[in-house]
Amino acid sequence: MLEAAKKYALSLLLQSEEVNIFPKDFVSAAIRWVNSWFLVDDPVAEAIVGLPGNEEAKAKIVETKLPKLLENPKFLEELKIQLGELERQKTRVKNLVDGTSEIEAEGSVTVGDKGIVEDDNYIQKNIVKGKIKAGQDVNIGDTYHQKGDNFSIVNNYFQHLPMDAPVPIAALIGLKKELHNHVSKGNIGEAIDKLVGLSGQTKDFQNTIIQLSGRWAELRRQKKKGVLSTSEANLERARIDVALLELIEEIPG
Image (cartoon, rainbow, N blue to C red; front, side, top):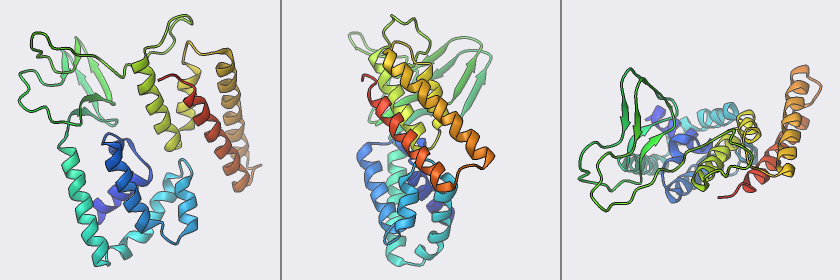
């Protein structure tokens, strides 16, 4: 129970990809529940959780408070309900290649149902966030469709397109979500790299991301040299986070 509770609470405090595949209302309710136990009457912990990244500090909050909370019968009862609901949500996600998975095959790879779909009551299915390397075709999606059915492929992300080539809206929607996840988890470098490589944006957009890239590189350099205090570094980091989030919102979709 200790490890399951630790993994559950930390994934919600970090808002990791593991929970972000589930419906927003479920995730929001679960985050509120975790906050009500782990952050109540603790402004320091609340401030730490409110900042992007800080994975080690957030893990420390969970590790420090969880053993005591598990002695509380009310917490334990609610925790069992939360974990049960998580398992129920997992049964509604199908054909998922998560971010830690790597599939390598000499032949073809199919992520999806190959025959007639008997039960399609899933919140998400046929999702690839990990790596697939195949010697032949890669098929993502159910391979059976009845005559007259409509289907679409979404969340394709294209980089380095010609400047006059429009990026598909579906791709931009997926990209925005991916960028938000990077910022929320503190992966600022990854978010900046993707924005730098995004084609078809305005000159102001491109200038802004180049400036942010320079600020991020300078912050890392100064932190490495030890010329910034922790509070100064955190303040600049927060300013870069805000500027990135504002820039991401400028992307259509």
